[in-house]
Length: 178
Image 1 (cartoon, rainbow, N blue to C red):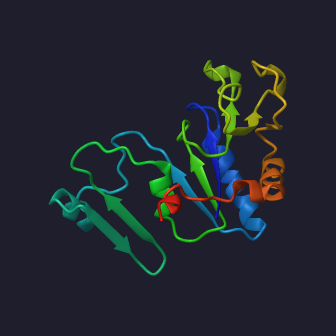
Image 2 (cartoon, rainbow, N blue to C red):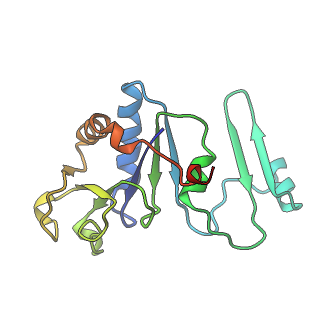
């Protein structure tokens, strides 16, 4: 499995870029999974549904499955920080795992940056940033030798990833313990 992260502040365009990138990678015959960092109290379940009721009753995990879909909800009794590596270990086999968020993870990543967000860029200080995607390459706050892509040029991002696929081959830090 190859892994690449996309980091950037809210409103920078990460989700839109990833959504289009998934399509490009699928067209190239790749099976793609996504891990998304969410806000603290997100919920994908709905009050009144059986799975919600089971979870509210105290189930640690609820798995809902059909012949087209599977969802697993795990409820932690206390706040628990899960590492991106633990989440990657939960994925079924795929060609690419795209990680959205997890800005401080030790994964190769493409920073999505827009000047209008008013947030600082991380690529000058983050050794895991391998490229930048932006709506205004001429407005980057610090010159860089990294590849720079226009946010609208998703095909170029896909080609970059596919042509450097070996760079993104994932080795779990848990494998070193074995």
